[in-house]
Length: 212
Image (cartoon, rainbow, N blue to C red; front, side, top):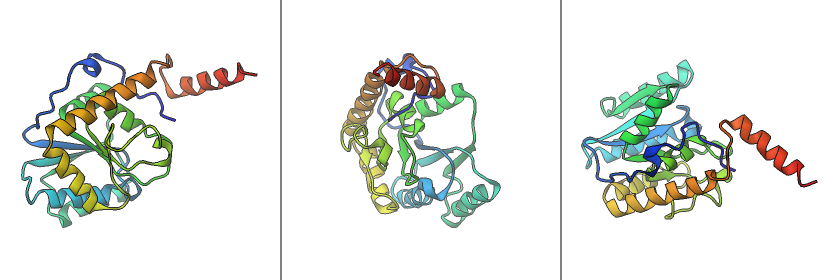
C-alpha cells in the first residue's frame, strides 16, 4: 500500500506541467545508490542513450555508504559518463527536492529491492512526471503499465534504454502518463489527513480497530 509522500499537495500538483523536453534533457532517480535499486542498469542505459541523445543527463538523488558511492563513481568513469551524471547525494531540504522533481523530464526507478510502495514513486506521481519503473510487489495493482508508468523488467538495461528512448520521443505519451499518475495519486491521498508515515500507520490501525 502506498504511503503518504514527504512532499505535500502544492499548487504545482494541480498546475498543468509542460511536457516539452528541457535542454539538457534531465532524467532523475531518487533512492539509495545501491545495486539492488537498479543503479548499475540505469547507468548502463545512460551510456547507451548518450550515443544518440547527446543532451541527456541523469540526476542521482540519494546517498550510500562510502564504498557504495565509490562504486558509483567508478562506474561513471568506466562508462565515460562522469560529465553526464550529477550525483547530488542525500538531500534533506524538501524545497530543494520538490524543485528537482519539477526540473526533470522523466523519473526512472528500476529497483528490484523488495520493499513496500516506494515513497519516491508517489512523490514523482504528484509532480506529474512520466515514470519508468519496475513494478515491485508492493506496487502491484496501483502502478499499471501504460496507464501511469512504463513498466520495465528487472536487471534489464536494454529494456530500460528502450523505454527511456520511447518516452523522450513521444510528448503525448509523456503527458498522458504524467497526468494520469498525478490523478491516481491525488485520488488516493484524498482519503488521508495524516501528515507523516507514522500518523498514517496509526490512522490505519485505528480504522481497523473500529471495525471490531
